[in-house]
Length: 329
Image 1 (tube, one colour):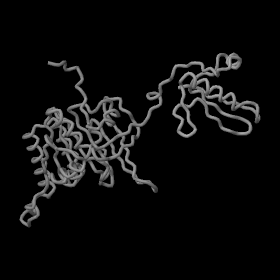
Image 2 (cartoon, helix red, strand yellow):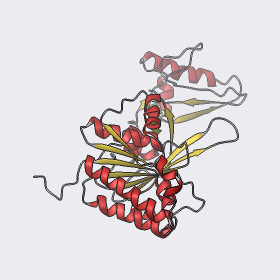
Image 3 (cartoon, one colour):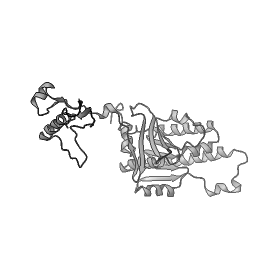
Image 4 (cartoon, one colour):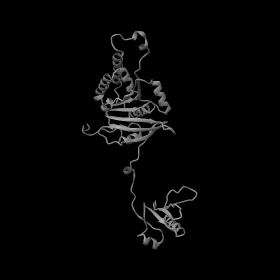
């Protein structure tokens, strides 16, 4: 048996960029909250999360309280996905609940409907016994609860129910209420926020931010993402000290021995040099000498008719100065 002190392997969310932001993925057997306005990509992320588990042979379950199975399969079809291995259970009010004899007289409707909905959810979980489960969405439970106290008690009860079942839970919340409830955020092990903004010009912009993730050093801040055929594509933000490789310093010869001696061996690679002088004093000649020497070493190929892929020198042609880059690579 594995050592109980050994941390379990992270679970992939099904989105490579998001896994990198989360430092490897999701800690298994925890409860996570995915928040976002309508159309932000919550359902797409949830399906990718379950498909990743199904691909590993896990038992996965999608419990929907709003959308129908047909609608979910239509979303999957738009991405070219096969939902084989992903079990979908609808917990939606039936037509019978709309009949006049279904009106409640003694109990408030929220007390009866919430209890029935919760019971239906627990029955499905007991039958499938999933290792990954998605609830879509909390806003339906919030409406059924009728008041914040009953809603919070219900979420806590669900949390306790899954605590010992070795199941990773993902709750979706569309944030439709006017006052944002932070209670679920405090309960969840991690919170992922999907945002969609509409600038005055251009297309909408989508961003993801990890609000909290207990015990994991995740990459904070906003990260852009887009929804395309095939699912979410996340572009983690660039962190300078993580992405910049400092090159080894060297000296670049101009090919003119006396000039190299004057410069102490040449110009240090990776630096920029400003050549200043009046018109006709030789700025262009010096710059051309460095470029020619680099070309002779086979380090640079430049063309006036194409983009310069490796620049040894660039000149701001003015009457008093020229600027030359010495990135000999």
